[in-house]
Each structure stands twice: as C-alpha cells, then as structure tokens.
Amino acid sequence: MQSTMSAITAVVLAAFAAYAAAFFFGVVEGNFALLLMVATAITGLYWLAERFFFLPRRRRDAQQLLEAQNERSAALAQQGFAQAGAQDIASARQKLLMQPWWLDWTAGLFPVILAVFVLRSFLFEPFKIPSGSMIPTLRVGDLILVNKFHYGVRLPVFNNKVLANNEPQRGDVMVFRYPPQPSLDYIKRVIGVPGDEVAYLNKRLTINGQPVQRSNQPDFFDGEQMRYTKQFGEQLENRRYNTLNDDMRSSFVSPIADFPFRDQCRYPADGVVCKVPQGHYFMMGDNRDNSLDSRFWGFVPEANIVGKAFFVWMNFGDLGRIGSFD
Image (tube, rainbow, N blue to C red):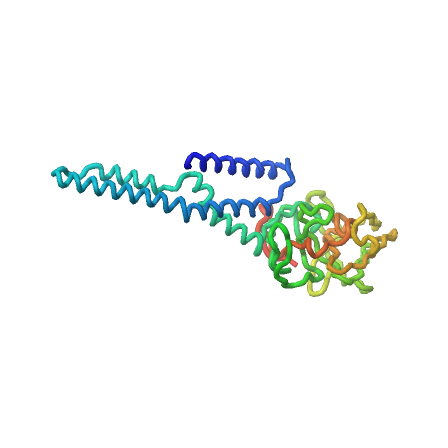
C-alpha cells in the first residue's frame, strides 16, 4: 500500500506543479482560487487519512515491535542471557513512526494551505497593480491588500454572497472581476452606484446633475514617460483623492463592444452619460485618460465584486508607498 500511495501522490503533485508552472508562465489561463480550493481539499483528505488511519497503524506496528522485543528480552533473561539490540529496536521503532514523504508533502502541508485558503478567501487577499490606470492613487508595482469581507462574505470560486455587509460607496477603490472576461481581476474607483446618472463630459465628472468637486493640484510627473500631466483633487462623498487628465487625449469615448444595459448609456462627441442599473456599479480609473473602465465596457454587476482595496503593503521600487489610501 505504501508504494501505491507514494505513486499516486507523486502523480498528483506532478500535476499540480505542471499546472502551476503553466499558469505562472501564461501557457494556460489558470484560476488560482480554484487551484487553492482543490489543494485544500486534497491535502485535507490526506490529513484525515493520516490522523485516523496511517498514524494509528504506524503506532500499532511500533507497539507490536516493542512488545515483541520485550517478550524476546524476557525469554533471554530467563535463560540467563543479557538483553541485546535495544538501540537497534529503538531506531527501527522510530522509523516505523516516521511520516513518509508522501504524507509529509500533503497532510503535513494541510494546516498551512488551509490557513492561506481561509485568509485569502474570506479575510484579505493580496494583489499586484499591473498597470497605470489608477495613477496617482496606485502605482505600477504596488502590492496591495483587499478586504474580502467588507462588502459581504462570499463563497470562494463561485463568488456567491452568503453574508451581507457594507454596500459599495462612491469613491471606494474596489477590485472586481472584469465583466467581459471574469477570469481577470480589475481595480477601479466606484463612481456611480445603482440609480445614479453618471456623466463624464469634456473631462468633467457629474453625478445626478451635480458636478463633482474638483480642485487644481500641482502637475504630476510621470517618470516612465518623462513628462508632466495635469492633476486634480476630487471629492466623492467623504473620499478625497487625485486624478490625472492628459491634454493630448480627446474627450471622445467609444465603447469597445456591446455590453449588458448598453441602452442606458449615451455617447455624445464630448464624453459619455450612463444611468447605472440596479445591482450594478459604474467604475473609473483615477488616470482618466489612460484607463479602460465602465465608459468603454459597461457596468460591474454586484456578483463580480471581489473586495475593497485599502492598503499598500509593499512596493519594492519605492518603500515610501507603504500605507493606506483613499
């Protein structure tokens, strides 16, 4: 049985390693949440088997070895011979009790994998900012934490809400599943909530007919493009943050494709006007002229919400980035 379990475990671990490598190098479009859930389930089964079958059997075998040695020692003592081989028996007993490699790499890892699964699925999940769509609030390379329970507890992988909490508010920085391709996670700012009419015309934001408060800020220097961009302070609800506008970009917005509730949006020459349907949200990047957001691909359904972004925990190129943000 040992050899059979060893071979099965080797195949399982090799399959996980191959899938993880293909996922990492972009050969396949992986689902890390699903991979983690499957790993938790498989290592959990090994852990249960170890606790209730394999470990008791090893202990039983070790006890039988010890009892056999004691009987042999007693028989030798009756014949007047001194006890011998005690050290060898102790070593053999230790080997019997030792966890084999295929349990060490499965059942032994279960507590760690379970902790990561629970932490990532229900509490906090780390993300890396891959693009500049949220500059200046978030920079490329920022490693951020996302609060997974702020908007309610959801089942991992399926993303079904099982426990309600806060509703998204205007100004929140939110991670969500990209509606045209739900396997991708996007991060933008909540601009419109259900029922809002959002207008972005001539690069000015208006919500329900009220212009969003905006103030001039010092120009932002883009170190990668080596040029300055106009920067503005903006306030939504109690959120204060900065946005960028590029004078070289037109105000014209062209949707990239048809999308659900497309009839709720109008696209005049100077921008876009949308009425946010129930159960959906209108998202925009802070880097307004360099962000693929709801202006182009539509609304984010409530079912696509992942969590609220709130903290930069590391940026290896700039340690001064560490901290919370609005």
